[in-house]
Length: 341
Image (cartoon, rainbow, N blue to C red):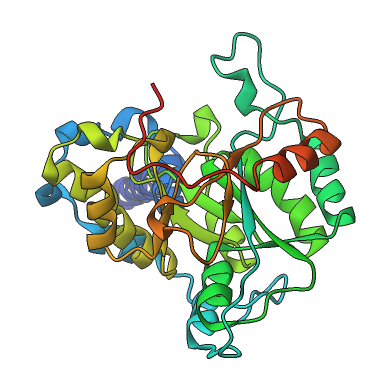
């Protein structure tokens, strides 16, 4: 009788251990897709269709503190030089008094999207630049005497005469946050010692659609890239209500600041669409300025809220890109409002 009770107790104990082990496995994500979703959220990438249109989200539903706390902050890029390239951080630029003689050189700003060959049936094949062609373009720019800088560096040079790297300054910017910008463009620019500008879109571009995956945004920041934004969902800002416009412009900045520990000094108008109301919202949110899709060169006398950019289209040969940059130098400033349709 006693022996039977001992056997029963042993079997019960083994059953408890098995149940506990299964529970631990389930919580750790080994038994389902919860683990992947968590990593995507921490990386700042959207999770499938969870991202909502700005017309369905009010500022009351946003909790930027929680998002930032979940991800932590990348303070290295703010307080010191880049871990990878030795480029100055935004905080160092802001604290640098400069020479006291504001710079006068004009600066072209390039705009890229996907660094890959366009797949069959791509709706906008012109937004795809192959990796080999991108590398050739960058090397041609370098050979022609250009050197990549950020918008923060450009503004510090114009306002306070903070020295720029040797060479003619040019800004290389990337829109939306495509993963190919990290896997294909980043290695090329890192090898050249150039920083670039990432205009990140916080939702609407999940990894399954080619968006950033965990750690890639922080990798760019650690390498000295400047992190700016197009808002949450690449919305047409001109068509939004005041609360939704505030959400896209101001709340997005707060979320990125807390999540990545960067100032986010520049806004990028989605599809280049803006009017006086949108410009006022950008100013109220504390940005230093904004970039458009109107080709031209930026200069010390430019309206910082309407900086021109040159869209680099797929198939543009390196020598053709150099010619395009030269050709738009004399263009007038972007208009007071812009509708691409």
